[in-house]
Length: 56
Image (cartoon, rainbow, N blue to C red; front, side, top):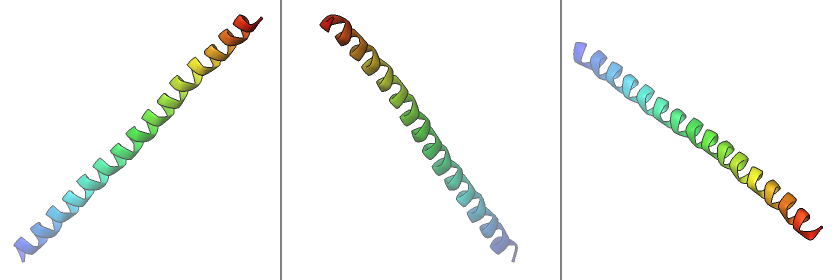
């Protein structure tokens, strides 16, 4: 009986660990995507303004 309960606790801990890892990966990918969009958005706006200045 003790072994069964220990096994259940072990699997629960493993599932919690897997869930924690998956959630952290998802959160990190979302943060990286937002950061990349911000970084990519700023230079394009700057390039557009520079092109306008060159055209004038």
